[in-house]
Image: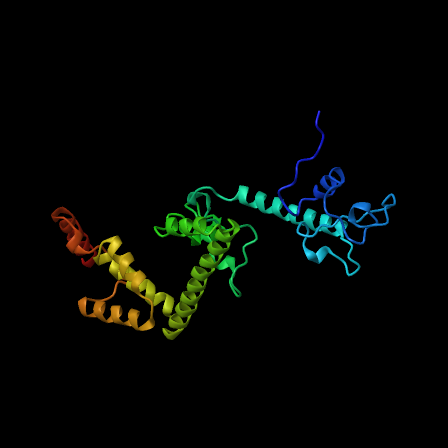
Length: 269
């Protein structure tokens, strides 16, 4: 069986040392005491293999000796780095959809944000904790394009989580700004701001459909906005306050109008 090593192809392959041992005809260093290299014809003693053209010159000392141990250590380090890079490449998503648009654990909220201010109530009146994941849209129509770009450039999947966190915090800052503005505008209405909002809503409830009322109330974002609605309602009739709340006759059928009129006549009698 032929145990001789084949000539290595990679010039940086450590196997060159064994190959040189098996092939003494390779050119050796001129400083070596070897009869084939112009020595004194002795037994040659310890010979120094010439790795010129095989190892980088950076591994050749000033004394002409080659640092094969240093080369092997460097080679092992590069091999380890390549193995880690291969592992990362193997773990990369193979399709764009593999980049999950999710906020990672340990998300850091914007400075000054208090999750307690974003609590809501469920149908039973119980507190529902704020979930930061609600601030991003997993069905965003631009998401596929972002995922495709991440795949194209071989981005780390963790980057997608960082982007989700950034976008969520941007939305939260907008909410914080809106809340601060609302507080400032409400303060301009004076100490009876709450009752003024309630009066406007009751008046609208008596004259409009629920969806219309909601749309109008949601559009009130300033003190002047509420004052404008108050002025319009005042021209249309007296505001509906708790003391004069009654059903709008325009919404009654004929029978209900008769019953309501009889009740009013009875009270005035």
